[in-house]
Image 1 (cartoon, rainbow, N blue to C red):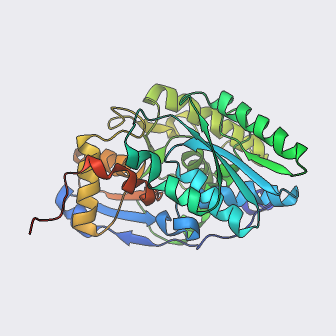
Image 2 (cartoon, rainbow, N blue to C red):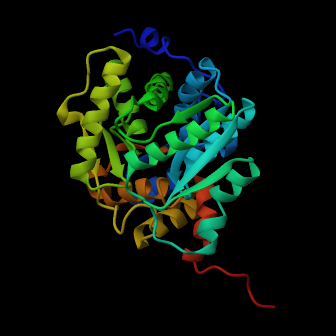
Image 3 (cartoon, rainbow, N blue to C red):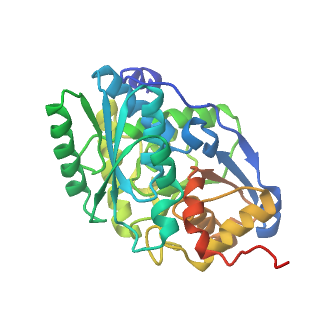
Length: 337
C-alpha cells in the first residue's frame, strides 16, 4: 500500500515540530517491572503542543484550500482541541470561534476560567456555550448556525466537525505519525494511547497495519465504555480507509480498548488518575492532564501484571494546560511562615 501517495492527496499546513522525541521512562518502568517509554507528542510545538496539532494540520489545510477566514470548532470546556485550533488559526491569520460543551459537571471557578479557557481568551477566540455534553450532532448543528451568521457578515467559515457522521480527516495526522514512529527503529510489545473521538487511536492503528507493523495498540477509554468505544473505533477505521481510498488493513482482533480507569467519567478526577499525575511528575519530571494522558498512564499501571518484562510505549498526547483547571483536586498549599 502506497501510504505516502494516499496522504499526499490531502492539503496540509505543516506547523508541528516533528519528529517528536521517543524517551525511556526508566524510573517508573523499574517501579512497575517493565521497560516503559514515552512518545512525546506533548512536544508538537504549536499553542503548547499536543496530539491535536497533527490532526489540525489536515483540517486547516482544507480550510486554507477553501479560502476560509474563520475557523469554528466545538469541544469540552477544557478541550485541548479547541485551544490548539485557536493557536493554529491565529498563525494563519484566521479568526476562531470556539463552542464549549458542558461535558463535565463542575462549577469550580478554576475549571471554568483557567487552563485552556484562559488560553482561548488570550488567543483572541470568540467563545460560545453549548449546554449539553453528550450531543455531538447537536453541537455540530449549532456550529453550522454560527457559520451561517458569519457568512452573512461576509466571512468564509470553516467548521472542524465533531460527530462521527463526518469524514475522519484529523486521523490522517496519525496515519502520518505511524510512519514517523516506525522511523525511530524501536520495537515495542504494546502501545497505549487515549481513545476518545478515536481519531488518534484509529489513525495510528491503521497507519501501522498499512505499513506492515503488527504492534498491538490499546486504546484507553476516556469518554465511553469499552463496548461503545469499540464500535466507534471500528466505524472510524472503516471511514478512514474509505477517506484514503484503501482497503482497511485492520482486523476486528486488532481493535483493543480498555475502560478500566474510565470511572467516574469523562474529565473527572479519580484516585488512580491523581496517582498517575503525581507519579509521572515525581519519578520522571513529566506532566500529565486528568482528562486524557493521566488516564492512559493509569491504564498502563492497571495492566502492570500482564506487562511484566515487556517493552511498553505510552503515547503522550499533551493537554497539560488542563491540569491547572484541576488544581483544587490536589491538597497542595504553601508552607506556613
